[in-house]
Image 1: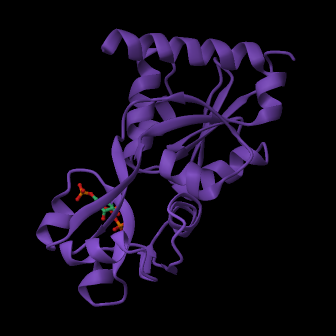
Image 2 (image 1 turned 180 degrees about the horizontal axis):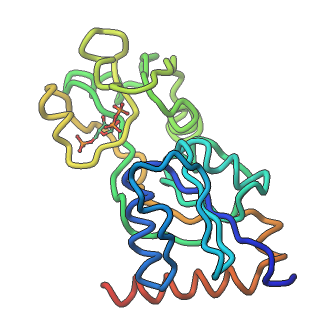
Amino acid sequence: MSDDRYLTFALGKGRLAKKTLELFEQIGITCEEMKDKDTRKLIFVNEELKLRFFLSKGPDVPTYVEYGAADIGVVGKDTILEENRNVYEVLDLGFGKCRMCVCGPLSAMELLQHHERIRVASKYPNIAKDYFYNKKHQTVDIIKLNGSVELGPLVELSDVIVDIVETGSTLRENGLEVLEEICPLSARMIVNPVSMQMEAERIKELVRAIRNKLAEAK
Ligand code: PRP
């Protein structure tokens, strides 16, 4: 495949994108256009390196990558697990570290231990379902929410929640606890399977450069 083809990156909007661009800068990949805070542009190009970048909502990143609209994506492991798309996960970028947990009031611990049929609120219904049905073999009712999930047990919508815990302060301030840990999370790089073959050299070189930079920083 010729190097004339642009390699396209989909980045999840927000903190992850900022961190990703900082990391890319360290290996000589810059995108000046993207630094303009007032811009309404959606796609940014580095003509010299033949790279394109766009920002999207996190859960859409694996979709763009699966369909090949982006060759490469950077997104949280939570989104990768929840979306379950046909993409290759090639690198743990080591930032955005947090945990997916079952949380609730301490009193809910007993319900979990006795495998009661409980209500579980989550922004991540697929992760919640996989955990309770396939790992714990516990039948539960899952209620999808779109954010501020901690409200679930507080207003008695649910017994527990499945959510991301980073510092733990949201839980603490609302009298909730981590009851079970599901898995650790961090930002990951994902690649479209066809791009992985067609652009193998460029992608491998990029992964190598990032991996070396991450190792240096340790
Ligand atoms: C996330 C997550 C928790 C919180 C955890 O929510 O869903 O609510 O951060 O962080 P902490 O352990 O450091 O308190 P986010 O801020 O992304 O908003 P959301 O509730 O609307 O999803």
